[in-house]
Picture (cartoon, rainbow, N blue to C red):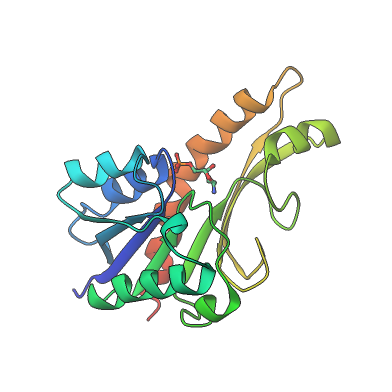
Length: 191
Ligand code: GRF
């Protein structure tokens, strides 16, 4: 089986990265994580990659005069590693339309809400504030418009009466760790 060379882009903790690394250890998993890129040198998730022996690259956005040059550096790193698929996993930079258009159907993101509800940040606090009974997470293809693009998979969890943003986030995150590997599998098998 040819495994699709996959890069994971992170900015922080990298618990989703870790879930993807674990899933990709199965010999029949259709994607292989061969590169982890962080825009922050202190991203904790880099440790998961290093432990797993995966190449890492730090591309600090503040070292570049603008988004275009930052994204050119990203693209160069991805191209030189012959990456075929990109997973955004807590990558806290908005990617411009020109970059996104280089990866049609080849770049996916995980968002901690039931899209199209609660795009953007602070999803759990907003879900509680809105009084919804269900929350969840979505893996979707990335398109130029933020937190939009066709849904690949979604998982739902209940919102409990005494939930705080933190307790709800933890319940959703546990689902994210199952959902993202399942969604990447589906996409990697599809081409
Ligand atoms: C997750 O909640 C993900 O849905 C969102 O950012 C968070 C990243 O968490 N996009 P981690 O870095 O994978 O632990």
